[in-house]
Image (cartoon, rainbow, N blue to C red; front, side, top):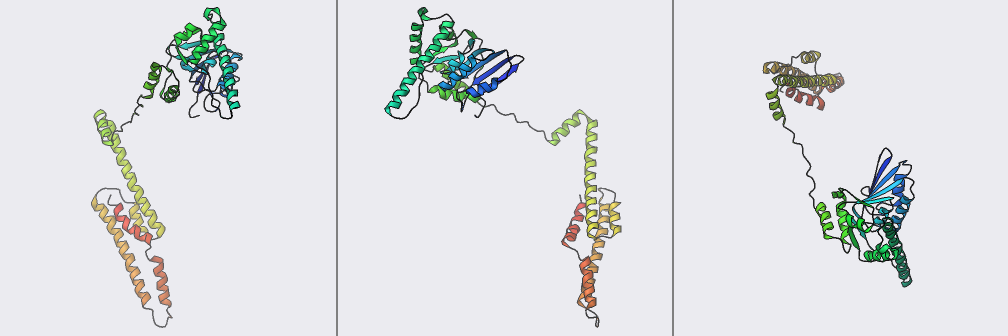
Length: 369
């Protein structure tokens, strides 16, 4: 099921079970759902509220029998629509009622069947038996409420079966006047966007659904979905202006906090550059000490000094590399090329790698922030 068709609430020793949807074991509310909800409930009284277009006759009869035999005091209340086999569940309560504005509908049972002519005849006979049995349940309720027509069960049953044949809709007040239910309660809100469309489509297939009732549901179906409220976030500048206007002391504290964060970021970058330089053995220790002891400042002259010092070290390293390369290309006579091999080895030890080049290119940017 896409949504729960039954809801159970329990307060102290009283429970309320809402049946909201089609009566079916497979895609609605069936006996297993109801019995599982009420199992070991230990409630003294249970109110079953029903809003249903009906459904499976056998499943509805099973739920009604279960409620009649339940040990606690069971009362039932119809809200919205109680139609078809759902009316039999409604009449299973020791006390039965409907809310003002709700509807009670009865009709003859129907079935879909395929097969040979004997299958059709058997189904027709079965439907007649079910029709008579359901009519008797309605008559029992009318008799219980002392409203038999002409004080006769036979006359009352004939009238009920005529109503069933014509698919008759009754308001809550009419259902009470006839004797289907024992009382009418105050109105209840029973339609919502989630189940209105399903109910509307189901009721359109009925022959005599009142236009007033269909319009009520259609109005709910056509209700616009609520527009989600999107929280507009103020820009940093807007918040800063508001803060400045309301509390200057907090503004000063905020400015100091931002300044400290910027200083911390610069120091972190310097420490990272120093770490990379040490790991690659590219700069002399005195250069790293200069970086370590550098006072963080925005004055260009101090930055220029640092850049100049690093540039000098880089040029010195490049000069050494060039000298070693030249000596490698000019081996001394009589040494069998050993000097050349030694120069090559030394050159490999100090020649800048791609990592070195990245460091060289990134260092000036660090100090230009």
